[in-house]
Image (tube, helix red, strand yellow):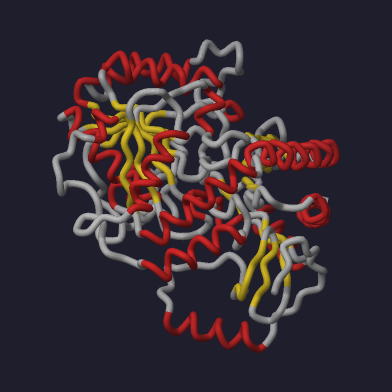
Length: 447
């Protein structure tokens, strides 16, 4: 069995099994399903992945923010096995089962706010976003939605419309869903208003006065949706005043304020949910990824009166809130609370940032370092004054990391960001080794 405390060795080589599987993948899997690393994962534990040829890798991408509690945590695996022996599926909308109700209760307890809340479950982050928007429209009887430039909310028609990056996500897939309005997000490193925080006067909030005159009547807007930390957009952490200001705007105009915590939730940022850093209580939250240690599950949680707006049968899905996935989520949350993974996320993030700041002294091409807990990224530029995106360096860094036994990935609307999403349970030795590998890759790409 693969050990979670293993420190992988460098010098991995891909063998015949990988090549055989690669050929089958090319033959049978749709071309649009891409893979960043040319490997087939056989097994994983903690923060270590092993491929089909026996090569081991340190995981700095965490299933893209899913494996916060580590690969195959024993208590979660045990809960999955126990539930699988009893019930795999029934469809909650026909015959109910206890894990669904237990998880709904737990999420209502741990999400921000003391008001009455309710929850519903589907399978993916995109489905959660779709349903949150539907619920908000049913509650307000309004058609419009405000989203933010740089945001990512999914690949379905509506969520692709809400998403900001054109290629690859939206290219050739139009026309898009109507009544979706985009506004600039707070991106202090590349401020749309040519200002500098904190002396900017929060022009990104003041813009709404013009927006509600020139673009759309706020009485036409059902919901505003925002990631508290933009994920695919490049791990952009806004000023604390930004989210609070958006909430006030929503309250002023009767707009449902939705926080998309699909990537930032569940102990990733140093708190159970990222919006807690901003002292903001959303009306609705969308949750997924880290919720169930890799089992397909997502949720919408929020104010009971808003959640109850759709009449029976108008939200849900056949697989939504699968009993095995719910059991995995309950065990994952229990593990996060018992082991204080939020506190561990702060420690991991602090060590990553410290190393990146050290590297920034050597490489001025590291234009910006952004972090909230263990949700960390650096933005690469060709020149720190012009801030011209240095996207060509990112694939080189990722490839050189891979050659040395580290799996990581890029982000950002310009493609010039490297993001760090290691499992929060990563050991100090693994983290140190991974950062050393990253430094070597950076030397090749920038040195």
